[in-house]
Length: 419
Image (tube, rainbow, N blue to C red; front, side):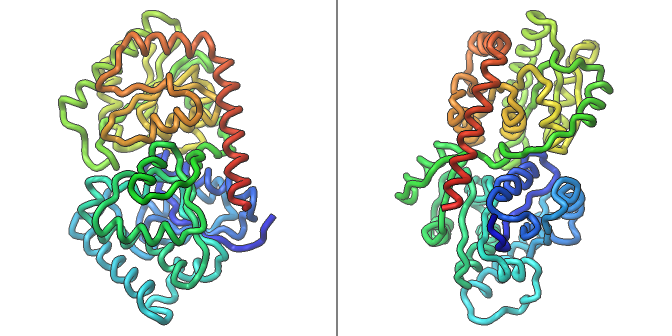
């Protein structure tokens, strides 16, 4: 095991269980190479942010040896106005220019994030979609300047850095110029699904390997807590299916138009009705992202008098993984709900919209499960009903296949990083 110190940027917050799970999966992955006591993680949030405090609490619970340090800028779209966010991102952009373009230690050389990078032998970009250049981010170049700071600073002081599996979309204009240099000088760049690899090749003309989202590599369970939750809503283990719903836009910035939300609700209702009428298992609606509260509750309200339809709200990725482990299968509109389920061996039917990007279809394709993913605007209900039958009839066979594929890709990624 290598005894060097490393920095991981960024540690995501707890508002979204899927985001936070990347922290745990990345730690699990890199601990096969490095000693956890030498891990620094730079939070996506400033020291005074409630998200930083909650992240620190949850990270301490599962990974007490890892040091979580505050971000050098404080941007939080849940509690700050657009003006406050713009002001803070402007400060981040100024620090980016100061540290990466000018000589010397800089005016904030005692910044914990800067100190961590100075002490580290390698800087890793956490798995995720930091560089998915969506409509919201395209309007805010300062955001990009702030986000890339750890890697540009590492570049300036000649510290190696690399990118754990990413999703990436269209990158144009100044963003493309800034990131081209950043990516070219990295020690490695990896993707978490093949569609992003193709997009990157199209944009930058470079080819890099595809592995898996690091959330697949969480190795913890919370069996007792999961059992308590299932008992509380009166669910029998291994005799229910789970559903996660999403009606938010890409990046969780605002909601889809009412017509699109209504279409999603109606189609999920038909899937629920099919399961209730054709099988004796119950249905569990799971809210694991706070942006999904209203839509999940609305779907439950339709079944207010149906005792076989239950609802829970949970944001701990380890607890969620433990719950999905007992599910027959999951109908997933949230990518990370699919990942929690698959990492526990539970099959998934993935539903997505084209405007959310390639993450869901790409991930399931990577695991040889492309028959289990459907575009929600255009799918044929009979095709999904047939897939539900397959999930039930071939459940054990599918579980073995899922475990085998995940284990194989993880081994390949560890070997790649060791090189």
